[in-house]
Image: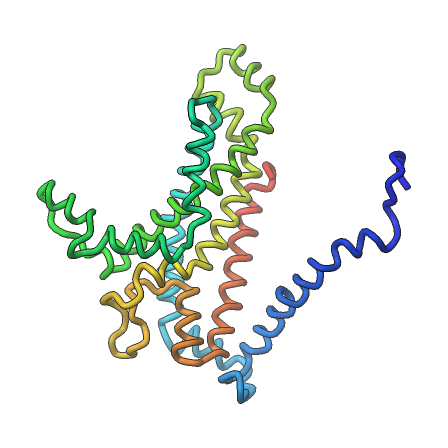
Length: 299
């Protein structure tokens, strides 16, 4: 026992964490091992043939689809991560100040986060409908021509990034608001006494102390960028675009997770889909390690 009389040794503490260990072991490492094994086979989940590195060779060298999916995913990340970070941090700074009806605004900003991603995608699909969507109607009233939002990935992906940023702004706001509340008031007061203005206090005091939270938020945003599926599927499935010759890719946006879905459940090439998933895992892990390297002094 420790000084407060709480038992810190024995079997009891491990029994409490046993359920989560079983869950992570079975559905985490177990599934990862199964996918790793699956990536070396040609299978329809009923019959399997070992092909070695054949799936990786097919994905990386024989077809251009994987690199197209990687390009679309990186293009989405370039839009989504700065948008998510700036909106979440901006809302947190606004809510950090004591304003009237602050609890109501927090509740309002959290509503999209607890809503279904598919429902939000369908709402945005109607708003940005090329024919009768409200956005194109407003552009028409201002004298601009209609924009075909769902026919080209160059304009569709920024809309999806905006949609995702709007949906998850409440989560980011709560995260940064909690981090802001941990900053001692004495630090801000000392900076004010030294003559620092509002921007200088934010840049030289608040922002450096928020770097661990920024690292975490950017890391989960990178993971989310490579894992986005439901928003793309709900917003663009069935719209004009894709490779008509294959009759498989019906969406103009081919992000990695959507590509895995198409490869596995449209083409029934589960071995190739598993190979793509492992390649994605390596890329995401490498991206987070690079981020950690550049922020290691602050995190």
